[in-house]
Structure formats: structure tokens, C-alpha cells
Length: 304
Image (cartoon, rainbow, N blue to C red; front, side):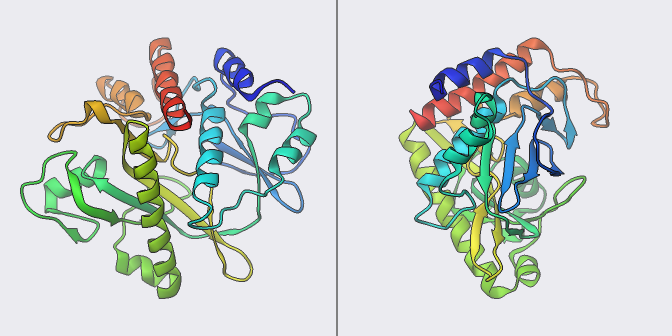
């Protein structure tokens, strides 16, 4: 098998993979980015190169984006395993090689994971005032029920990270909910475990990102439980698709700092006359290339 770095370089130079074909297992799910297959005793997640904005999947995809996201998730699952168990099976590397001996691209994009019951909420942690949190603060002085001091600026660091859960919508937008509503949805004991794990994961990610010259402004986690009720971290973790990363040397409160996520794509769409309804404008080559460069820069900085 060739070296993973060589496989990633080949994926970056290849056309975007937006649809996974030829997998000899039942396809049991298809999200905005990932395809889910049933292996019998486990699940296979394959990250495509699809990219979405404003809940619309865009064309074309971003070459190697799925491989970059998977590589980062694998890294962070290892780095946070002491904080909360995760869904990745310990023999996944061997199983991926056995499943796809002639498809190094799928080995890069795949994860073999436990079968779990996903929780019906997404767990957002905000360490800085940005994005929808900034919009909410400007309107009401609060974020998801957390009343904040007056006079904060865009991108200001908060005195402590906020746990701001949302609903998990199968279609359309996820909606913010208060901690109290989340506790009613999950039950108090499970809510306390999820909140504690989310805040610890954010702190670990923020610390490690800082060492890499980056700021983790906010992020989203997903969790699931097994048949005994044990909690696991699932899906992806601390990637540019689920997180807002800023370069530390360009951070300045009062403005929206440049980021290593798909904000570059959103900015292009905002400059267009698109009404945010399908179909979306086709992404120009320079936007595709610029987005790939930002994702890879995050990968390079975080993994070294």
C-alpha cells in the first residue's frame, strides 16, 4: 500500500468524489457529506467531497475534502479518547485495507464504527462571539438563553465557553434550543454528561489548536449511546466542516477574522444574487481551489 501522504496528494489532484459507487454493502444513509453502509457488525462511513452551504449541496465538490475531514476526525478521535469514548473501532485500519485493497482513496475517506443510537440534538460550544451567536447577541443581548454583558464586539472571546445545543433536523435548518429544553429532551443525567463532555472536548481542541497557531472559535459535537446507555462521541470531530478555526496571527476582535472553513464559499455566494434556494450557482474554479487550500492548511497545521 502506498503512503497515506501520497494518497492524499493524489486525491487533491483528482476530480472530486461526490458519489460513492461500487460498495458491496447496503447503503443505509446519505447525508450532505457522508455515505453510510451496513457491514453487519459495524457501520462504514465514507466522506465524499460534497460541500453544502445554506442547506444546499453545491457543485462541483472540493477534491480531497472528504479525505482531509476523515484524517482530521481520526486524529481528534485519538486525541480525545481519554475524555469520552468514541465510535471508531480499534481495528478499523486493518478492516479498511481488507475492504478496499485496491482503493487507497476509500481507505483515506473511510471509518469503521460502532452501531449506536444517535442523540436527537447537536452539541455546539462557543468560545467566541461569532456567526449566528454574534447575530443573536446583536439582536437580544443573549445567545441560546445565555445573557451576555453589554458592549461585546464581534469575535470577542467569551469569559467562559457556552454550551448552546440545537435540534438535529433531517431537512432544513437546525434550530437553537436552551439548556433547559435540551435537558428535557435528553433527561437530566444524560444532558449533564453530554454538556460536560462537550465543554471538555472544546477546551482540548482550543488548547491543541492554539499550539498550532489557530483559534477554535466554536464547534459542534454529536453523540450516541449503546444498548446500555453508555455515551460515545460520533460522526466527525473538530474538523473545518464542524468547527470555526481562525489563524491566530490574524485574529482581531471587532471584525470577522478569516477562517479555515467554508466561509470562503459562503462569502462567494453572498456576493452573488442567489436567493438561497436550489439550484445554487456553480462554484468557479478559483473558489474550489481556494476552499481546498483552506481545508488543507487546517489539516497541515493541526497534524503537523
